[in-house]
Length: 513
Image (cartoon, rainbow, N blue to C red; front, side):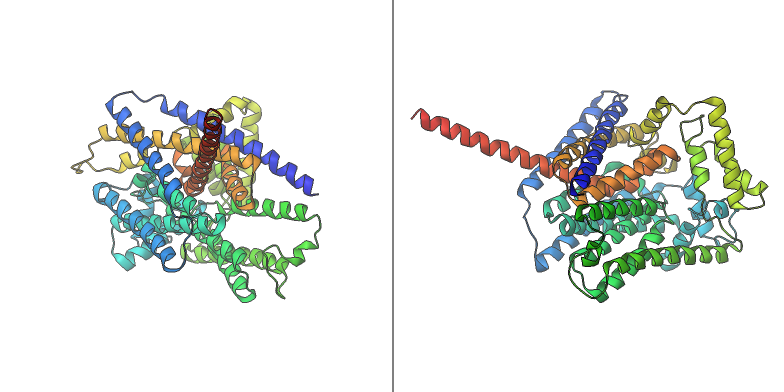
């Protein structure tokens, strides 16, 4: 049984290494379209200097933290990240006008009853329904205006950077990785710019990292009462995160795979009674898993019930078929367009808001199109992969929102220069993620494997559903952690080579003395 688990881990390791190598090739291809002008060379120098500094941190950062020193490090990361993001708000955010879905969300957040006055789109696409409520809540606290939401994005990003650091230190027992991952996430160029857009991804990122921290706390410091409270709280947080971006299902699948591998490794289901989590106690660990599932499902039901009340009608529980139809349409390789984007909404309205019937009808239409046009070929999915992962182009939406009143950023000149910088940064990130995948093929552990499963699960989801370059920003924290881990492993190999080389030179010099 243990051998089976080992084989399964290696098979997944190979798959993830191929995926990471694809990211590298795709990112280089995406960067090849930029003109090699002065700005191109300057941006490349900036990126190389940044990662040189990251390697320096990996070599020179302190190895452990204790007591007040640890809290000071967490606070310092939060402050640095907040200052950087507020600087972006000052330069860019003060001169933006929210457009598209972001503009709609802001417009309805200013209503007395946001969902009750929203169009059918929010009732049908319930994945966006809760975000205007969030915007309204923070505006009632801190003042009305789109700048309030932008500043809150900056605060959430700062908290997320601090959570990344704590997660790496607690989960991977390596402060260096925490420093680097927080540094990479904080200074990710396109993500910094994208934070001036009112989008639910930032709330999802914060809640996802908070969930992982709660689970890690249970694993490391198991106490019966604390574990039950943390499990319940983590289930609520994960459920809530899924209403800002549907990554909660991917996390559940990844955790389930890790649980199955654990059971296979222990070669006995009875081992679950001894503890998945560790430590003793009267509370059976299987009951904690069952408690988590029950609270998660109950939270989903309660949140949907609240949305029904706020809207005045039953909102859609599962708009998945919309994203699958858009993601597998033959017209634009899975990206949204008016023809494919409106099919599901039209079917819902024609079926008198019978969502299950509309999903079934949409699925039948999709099957008919696939059968008729025969477009689902490897080339089609290769193109979808390029659309999703080739460029790091979230700056497109920032360029769309910038007002002509901005004294610094004049459209469209700044867009191409900044996009070149973001693409070079993305290429370096992909290289270090690929290095991490190569290291994990030979030496893995449960937490690193979970990170890979989470990222790879998201990639698989994008193969089937709608793709946009900006969608992958919810994976930036995980990608930052994998890249930082790759840097630290790479530095370790360099140190090993240097030490061996030094020993060899010394031995040779002894011979000739």
